[in-house]
Amino acid sequence: MAKLKIYTFPDVVLAQAAEPVQRVEKSMHGLADDMLETMYDAPGIGLAANQVGILQRILVMDTEFEEEEDEEGMGIIRNKKPVIIINPEIILLEGKTAIEEGCLSVPEYTSEVPRAEKVKLRYQDIDGLERTLMAEGLQAVCIQHEMDHLDGKLFIDRLGPMKKEMAKKRLLRERAIREAAGLSPKKGHKGF
Ligand code: ZN
Image (cartoon, rainbow, N blue to C red; front, side):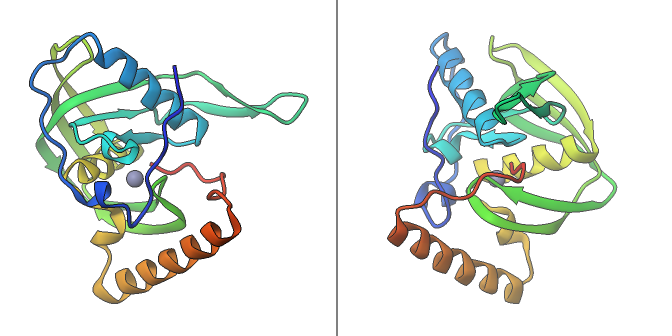
């Protein structure tokens, strides 16, 4: 297993649409494991392949894990419930919700975004089997957020024009400052 690089705004791979996976091959287990390791390490509750520079319709998520600290203050993840989703297709959207969203590719920025409250999804699992999933609340929002990534869209693209402009300016400025100082984005909020 290996931790992958997480691309951040305005890296172009985040603005490109991912391609459907033609055949779920055995080799995909490695990529999915790497994506999960990268997500848990961030820590995040969801990660789409675009975010690690791969334009294939794959996403991973776990909206239920708990994070604790050991005696040395190192983070440990408990009660993992990883889900691997390939070629997702929304077959039903219901209701309205908005929660504070963060994104591992949009560091140190959060905002509420209008989303559907419930989502029904058709997808393939890591063995290539057809499955459906009914999600609501945080998991439903996470799925919509990750599927936006697969379409080359970020959650800040769903903000009003003024707010979006301001967010993008701030993100560019902060990234320039971080890069000049050789720093990585701060860890801390569970983005997706
Ligand atoms: Zn994201």
